[in-house]
Length: 192
Image (tube, rainbow, N blue to C red):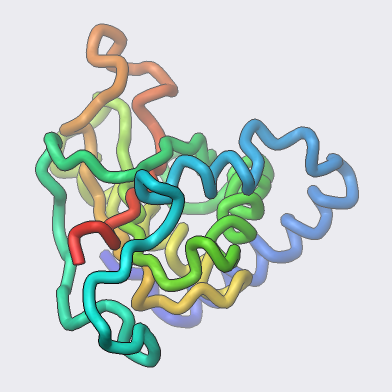
């Protein structure tokens, strides 16, 4: 079930307030990943975007290619797995989740990534039904995209939220592992 605009506005306002409080209480060094680490992971091989045509990138840098839905697992694209914590059984961000998204927001505003598109892929552990997990991962991916758009002014057309549910665990031997609950950021620009 999609969130109403009013509910989303309240959640994003709450996340903002929590983010300010957390940044005052915990130094940025407490984050488990830096914006520079995120940038390095998301840059295409060779260190930046490739020029594929003589057409000017702005104002339509994506050349009409519309990336939606799940990517095939064998797609080798620049990516990074981030631990973005949410409240249990919810798409509400925790303080730790906000800290991680602060680093991600700064990275996506960097000039080296400015004209690239990213899939925001939500993943869950294997608890619950597959249908429920798919819905939860979709809601969480959507929340990450909305947070980045609202607080870091990342244009929404650069962010493609997709839920994968429990279908791609990184630790299949341990179905309840927290490692399976993650948000994966995938640079889909090389597909353009």
